[in-house]
Length: 307
Image (cartoon, rainbow, N blue to C red; front, side):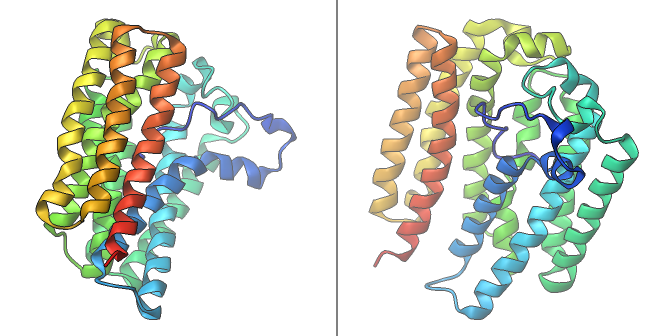
């Protein structure tokens, strides 16, 4: 399962040799990425419930979050296994336990399978089959379609593969309603469009890492200037997508103001990145993209409970 976000650049290499085995398994799940996935899924759950949720709804949300967390963690572990050779060539990922050989292929695969099976069972038995199948399809979309097929094949990998990373709100909505409504699809569209400028900002200042890895990332295949233009254009499209909750009637004025401010900030960062490139500005743009998505969805949550 792709994250709505890649691992933050602030993540630092960890001396895994001094860490217990359980900690190495935990690192394999990419916890920061999974946290954002579960947060976006939770927003979908909350927005699907009119008014304040009762105890039964809160319990259902907790169980659904646990199931989604397990499957997302399984996808992250499988990704680390498949990309261990590539990870070993990149400074950003060379510290991962699979890349360092701290965990064997068999251990990583068994761990991923166990998490996926446990999460799928929870969702099927205590939530509903639709959520389980959508979550499993997201796992396949990220772990197989994106990681194995698209990522080494095309520089548009993150655009196409971003569909799996945009699924968490849909999963959350399905968990509470048993269906996929238009509100959930709007949330999906926001994350889907947000993903390319977010990821390409990271790829710009990590371009040498990706060049060494052999992956056809956009800055490697089309250069910095073209990639920066794409980042800017996507932030403009993202602004339009972020207005849809207000236009459709699923949010009010509080969200609208927040969306305009946050998207204005994202566009300003992208414009500065396009006009005067520096690695520092690329890092600022990447970090702001994380703030943008988190606060945007938080604004939706607050707006949901305003009178």
